[in-house]
Amino acid sequence: MSRTPALPILIVLAALAAAGPAAEADARKPRVNDKVWSPNYTASRSRRIRYVVIHTVQGSYAGAMSWFKNRSSRVSAHYVVSFKGRLGQCVKDKNIAWHAGNWSYNVASIGIEHEGYVSRRNNYTTPMLRKSAALTRFLCDKYRIPIDRRHIISHKQVPGSTHTDPGPYFPWRRYIRMVKQAGGPRTRPVSTRAVVFKGFGWVRKKPAQGGAKLGKAPKGQRFVRTHRRGNWLRVWYDGRAGWIREKSVRTLSRVPLVLVRAKHQPRLAPEPGAERWKRFLAKGQLYARDARENAPGWFRIWLGPRQAWVKRDKVRTLVR
Ligand SMILES: [Zn+2]
Image 1 (cartoon, helix red, strand yellow):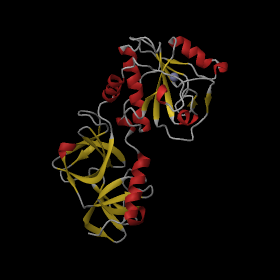
Image 2: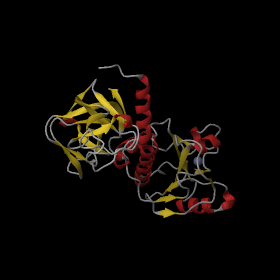
Image 3: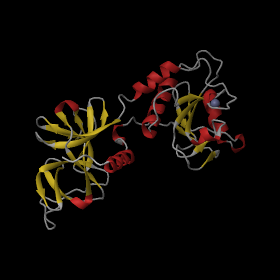
Image 4: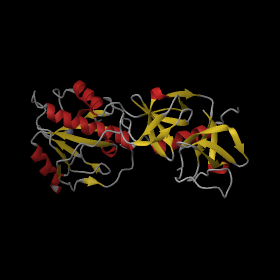
């Protein structure tokens, strides 16, 4: 078996980064009760969202919503949360709200306002914290923001800030814990490896037992894992991302994989005229190659419930 050249690894990493973790496995956005769009924003972002900035209104929920709607206020935030856990949105995530008082932080953050006052000891109610934490969790999952105090920050932490919000009574430790718990385990990339089914198993659409099935996996079928969520692994299966239970497979190493370089429809036999597989493979997907069978110009892969053949010039091979 040949050593893996460096280039394909970089390509794989880039492909995985571009594909991102399965959106279907991420925390859901909590329901927005009030959408009152603010005119105070800058369209589109030049930088990736890296922070969630926590604010306190110094006033009521309704007051904040109407203040942000007022063009002459020249301020806004993406979201406002009330004492009772009502959620308002004033600026779309893709746009830059004017909340942090620091342009480079505005460009790279989402701002969440909390009803009430910095100086009030019992300002941050449980329904408010719960809704806010669920929202922050959704944002962290969607934009790949680490769940820690270097990325979920107070307005006070923003360099150059003259504000003190959310103040000494905001329960940071509890809040971060709530953000972590709000969506269950996070979907994380794992080192790319082939896995083999120890017995007959199922590939599911979501990482949950009893959920909708993507397809079956007979004993010995191999797939390529890319992400983990709790005890579940995400694999490529028949052109789509699916989830399998970790305990139903064994991990292999130093086995050949193929990385799809271009949209491609596999064949049932290694001939140009052979019957086509019903589904396309998309660029960036990874499959385990069955090196026991070879045909000039073709690779045999474990695709889904069965094997299929892909053209060599449509894929890159690597050993992981
Ligand atoms: Zn603030």
